[in-house]
Length: 377
Image 1 (tube, helix red, strand yellow):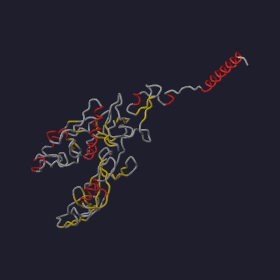
Image 2 (cartoon, rainbow, N blue to C red; image 1 turned 60 degrees about the vertical axis):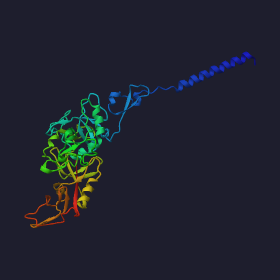
Image 3 (cartoon, rainbow, N blue to C red; image 1 turned 30 degrees about the vertical axis):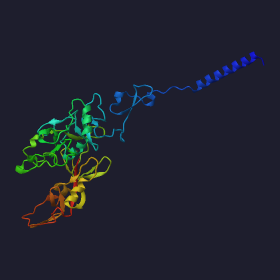
């Protein structure tokens, strides 16, 4: 074969190969995916406080993600911002923050703080949400360990004030003392928790002489009518919320109802409710023991979002209708309560006798008696 023939055949083979490749490419060509087709159909502002994934083909398109419950609602975490119909880790543009989560079982604290000698919570309302109240001391004890998280959230919301925690709890720093429904709570940095040890060195603060002070043994002014309790004039409010925000009212309870947690477990029996029926006291009969054993057992109970303590006499007798006996001249104790050993008769709490009690039996702190633990909700 001559040289010209070889070149002609080679050229034909190259052309054939070229057409074959072009034909294969035409057969395998596909339309490239779009951001919308892959689910990236939101803008950054649409996602608000939810986690965002950026589309690899368009930096302006996002897919919003969040850790949600079975209803598609964001799981609340301490420090989250509660809106009327949403819960977000970040500020939602153009929306009004209602509260900040301090208890993942469903409790938020107000964004606003108040300076008042009276309870400001009954009249407090934000974005149409009312029904606020002062926190209990137990709720304050849940807030104290998370103040850094809560202050970080407050720092994201314009026009808010963060809690001060840098100075010790003394009367001259009364802005560290906050009202609760029963006493006051101290949020100073040097107090490990609200129920911590005495933080006062001044003699007048460590004596009950003249009925002035209750020795501040729990880091706060505890005697309601003591002459120095006027210093406690700072307050914030708390309220329940639902998984979809603050707009849905919580379940209404009555005394005697079983209080059930979000995970479906029975926490205890409702023994006291307020006018709204949405918060009050839950109690649980817990066994027998000495006063110390009962006190420690209640304090060591572990229920997420609840701080337990030995129940009062009235709450104890709501569950233990009859415990102990009482006659005209003697009394035999049957229960340990936060106010001492006593008895329950037909659901009524009493620690006295009909006339004069000459004999009291089984009423020492070392007696093995029934007891009940309680917590707020």
